[in-house]
Length: 88
Image 1: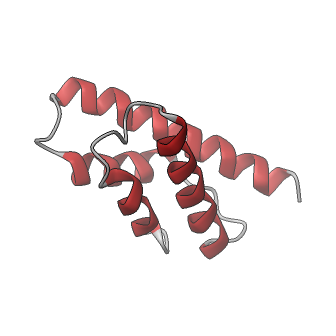
Image 2 (image 1 turned 30 degrees about the vertical axis):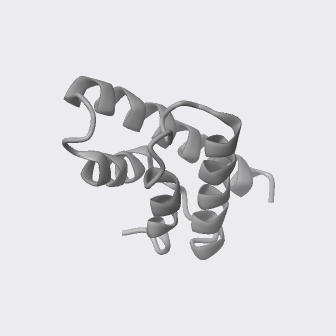
């Protein structure tokens, strides 16, 4: 498991976490930055981030919508992580 993955909790605790609102996105990006800093040179795999999001939000959204959102945000986290690794 990724160190510091619980940094996503502050974002996921917001009722608007999934809306794409700029404040929510800022909290998401800060969480991803924190996870990356605790896991240097480690790719944040989409599957691990998605599983964390789904376990945190299970029962709070319709299952297919949660699946879609988990994939969307976990893909963003993986892409950011990949960029950080490649840009070094």
